[in-house]
Amino acid sequence: MKRVLITGGAGFLGSHLCDRFIKEGFHVIAMDNLITGDLKNIEHLFKLPNFEFYHHDVSKFIHVPGELDYILHFASPASPIDYLKIPIQTLKVGSLGIHNCLGLARVKNARVLIASTSEVYGDPTVHPQPEEYWGNVNPVGPRGVYDEAKRFQEAMTMAYHTFHGLETRIVRIFNTYGPRMRLNDGRVLPAFIGQALRGEDLTMFGDGSQTRAFCYVDDLVEGIYRLLLSDYAQPVNIGNPDEITIKEFGEEIIKLTGTEQKLISLPLPTDDPKQRKPDITKAKAILGWEPKVSRSEGLKITYEYFKSLSKEDLFKMAN
Ligand code: NAD
Ligand code: UDP
Image (cartoon, rainbow, N blue to C red; front, side, top):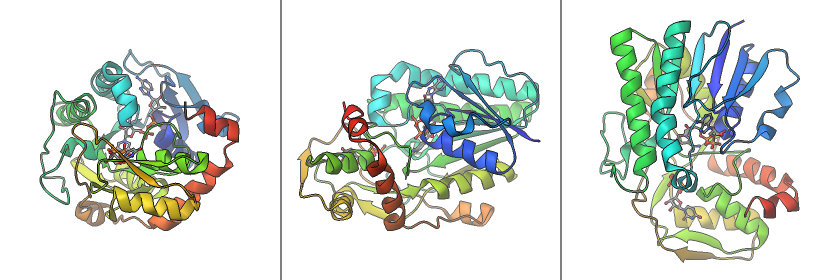
């Protein structure tokens, strides 16, 4: 049985990856310090003999007994309000955390896949963003703690690949959504759906003309799985190129939820990227991958998930 370590395994994406690797017959070790994650996301796996959970901060030395075939480094605060609240931990998990994972991988002779992000492109001046674009990041702006940690993480990973011959993979993930997102993580989809469910107005930042392109979580997991098993060590964008303005997105959520509330405009956060859309030419050519779930389909599933939360959760999580 192949053995995989998934850091950030109790988070939104990490927990979906745990599910996928269990389904594929792996022995899965999830590691998480629960700073933004939740054991509820993986509690259904605890009874399985091929699943283990380690409560550990990956920015500190990592010890895992036994063999490892793969390490997926997904630990990191991921939403702007999270990384603004814990900027130093964000920088540490992207630097010390990946260093520990790469060191562990050398000892175990494991292949490492890192969760990078469309944020390495910053506020992009090239649109849509191909992997060859070097980005437009403000290192000392509020988002710099996340963006630069991820850029460092890519550089460190590539250095281990080049200098130590380690097997590495880099996925640049674009905005992804689905069940198990936290209602209070501040990202636009849970924010809008949470507000609709609580009967509050939807808080659009700026005039809503900025764009994003939203990928359903199952599509992302499929792309990551294919990349891990591929022989391609350069970065690959995984995302859904179906671009939409935030204003149009808010209107879609209003229609989906049937809320009587309206969109209200709040100030645009500093350095908020004005446009974002993945160029997925590489993923198509190298992995034979493209997204399958439309936004209307994915939003319906995600809305059902948020509706299934208790009223108490809805209000407690919003604080
Ligand atoms: P999340 O907050 O749900 O998950 C992150 C997990 O990492 C949490 O469970 C958290 O407790 C854990 N963690 C954070 N610091 C840790 C540390 N020092 N030690 C151990 N565990 C730690 O976020 P997510 O959306 O699931 O994001 C997962 C990864 O994917 C992140 O690396 C993020 O940067 C990347 N990513 C996500 C998106 C997206 O749209 N969701 C987009 C681009 C990149
Ligand atoms: N946004 C918004 N209202 C919210 C939260 C976010 O209008 O309540 C906007 C935000 O300014 C950004 C877009 O939605 O332009 C996506 O934000 P999110 O935090 O989801 O992701 P990211 O900026 O990291 O792509």
